[in-house]
Length: 544
Image (cartoon, rainbow, N blue to C red; front, side, top):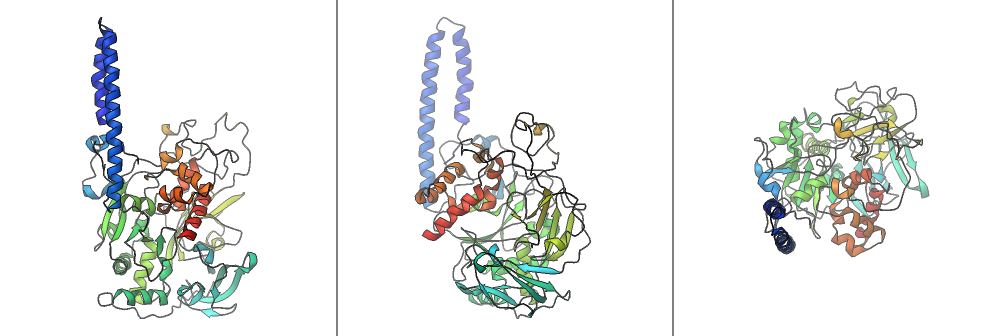
């Protein structure tokens, strides 16, 4: 536990400093210094005992289900509770959570304007976007088949009740296979007509949970839900403690979700109403509480949900961080998550009876001629979206953000849940004496670069790691950017040594790859922390 109780110690130092000064100027100075040191030792001992007692109280309280994360749970008050800034006037004090750890990575190429929608011909659904699915799912279509939006493409043989459907209407033109004949993608050539399979949704007010779940399974919107821990499509028979939706994203160049929801307010509200029927707990929205941010009324004025405002640097917008500060995932707990786009799609299904997978996608990065938002559908072809928009040279294309996104291949598609494409320069070169002569500005938390002198500067980043993988050393950097009551360094070591009990005790089930991505960014050892974390989650899942 990281309880910080420093007010009493600070007060002692202020008082004792005067005594020490007077002692040095008097004949009995040595005695005063001695007694001062004895007093300091006594205070430190008392502080240590009270801190340990407070931590033990916190552990016992968490066993009883008492929320201790957002409040200082101990004998001594935190200085931040006494002198900290109050929440903004527009935000209820009890629902305002200020995060101090983290780091905002400012890059060139932010999306701001609405771009003309490019002609996108192909779309795909990728089984690999879903954790723990069979590598060869049961494919329900063949090449040459015509499908409508909402028609079933494939399902997992282990859970055949969960259907994965087409985002558009058209012809199945490719069933792309990978190693050992695994299915990489089912590709549809759009007919541009957007014909939808018609569904008859139940009335939310009168339908029970079982009817709603069954309809969501049949209509293909069930995979729009995500279960934590492990980030899997939920078991229809399970009931989550709560459902969380983050309504803002703090990742580099992330889209503004308040713009995304414009024109979709009714569908978003309907989606929230549907989700409230799936849990015995609450639907909880994480809302942007940072100064100067324009928050959509669809979020701040949402009804039938519980709202929390988060303020602070990245990863304040990560749903995992928000869950940790509201309802920490201790053993035995289970929550579901969804995104703004997916809630809108669920809402449209219950309003219109059709699988409408349309979404705004942010085209971002300094290597694009034009950055901005384009309207397309889930799983769109990246080549079609970026046609004639990429600058000359060697670039890397990423589905998602630069920290946790997936590197795209030559002919690839947006991942199932992604609403952002990032294009940045490939850093396949060595920098002579780069560690000795840090001339070129770059996004970094290192004090070697005086980035603090220009806090609003946006960097032109590339993929160069500026060094090879090194020994796994203790630096304290992970803890400085992860606003969670977790020791990531110790956790990573426990995973690497396959220590199951330590992994569980250190809180691995609270983390997802995006939560640890910033730790990987600041890692001086160049360790692939996200892949290490997924390895640990796989071990935990096998044991569960």
